[in-house]
Length: 257
Image (cartoon, rainbow, N blue to C red; front, top):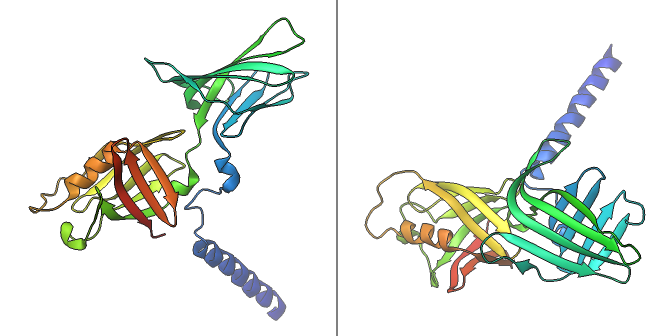
């Protein structure tokens, strides 16, 4: 009986240690990502036949179950952008194959899983020895930079260092969830939340909402939320997140998590 009790106590201890370790390591609060995830910024897939596309800054990789087109790597090229719609076209080729990849911001339903993606993808691909072009369609999405997934506290706003006296109680902060493309936080007077729109070289804070507490005169929450909504680009380095637009630097944050 003592032996059984000892085994039970040991099992409980091991489970407890694993739980504690998971909490201390952050559990599942951030995406399981590595530097490899920065290699590609867009992924698309299709069915019948199964195929996939990965677009990165250095290469574009096409894979499929099509004989002779199991894996084809192309050098990266700049997208050709439509003037009146969010449509991008990539014309790529290598020694053996040429392809045209078209990405359009349009809700797309996977023909097998039924899941909805925010972009439709079309691929026209042909080996140089072939007369006919293979036409494929599917769905895809941009892969939001996993480094954004964190808590960021404001340090500078519109080129000036900020202080607690510029706000109601504490410094503004945002917590970005890159897996779900949303954010929440504190604007300096009210709680704020919203969505993020991410594409290659583009970051926007959208659908920004806040609580309706009246802010004292001199509070800079309005300037802060305006900076968020004016953001189009970003950079990350030295534990800082810098938000900018074509006019210049808007806000600088420090990573605190």
